[in-house]
Length: 206
Image (cartoon, rainbow, N blue to C red):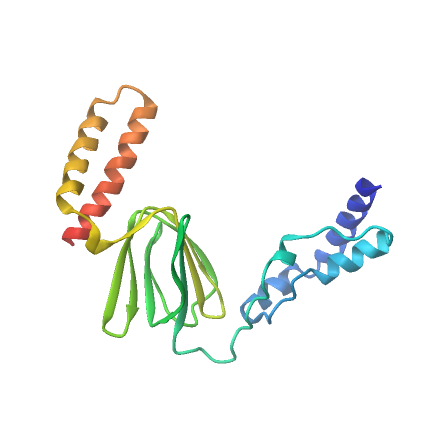
């Protein structure tokens, strides 16, 4: 029964969504606050089977998204999260610079919605004349139309806590390993070490 219900829902969603995908995409930049569930899904589910409660979707566990302001705010709200802690939570700043794979990206209030993959490099948080710098290994930056940016990194450390002598030592060791690697796996591991330590060294000396 569930299988038939899911199939019918998928068919209806495909038919209804084909003409509205472009409209939804164009409206993203001015999207209002969203409810904690998908009303269209719930309504379609109840039309198929009224005796079974609709399943929970990811949206039901999410807080409503703040609405996009009518005018560009003067500050950017930033969240910076690591797997083991939250480094920055709902902090209002002037600008954030992140090391995207496409190049260094500056994020200001009113930035267009974007998802940027991060590479090893320096992330800087600008508050007036104060600049806080972190070295991030990798991750993603989620830039929302409501001037909120979420940065999720695999690993990060304040730049002023990094020992440059250890970085140079690690770079030399991984460079030597890359030159003597005998398998593709060892070459890949050594290349990652060289890339990360090169980025660290450039951040400290640049």
